[in-house]
Length: 74
Image (cartoon, rainbow, N blue to C red; front, top):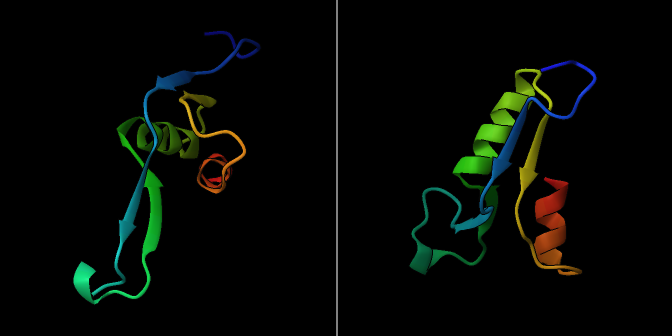
């Protein structure tokens, strides 16, 4: 692909939020949850971007919503 055109990789898929208790707690013991954003397609696009590729991710997130905004920032 020419360096002047588009992206090296375009991923299409869902983005997921993982809510997990801080280690070593179990879910029933937790009073707070850690938030991790990922998903196979998002993880591949992020890894390729770290390797220097121009990447894009096509997905859907809630508009004007805290979770959607946080996902886009990440």
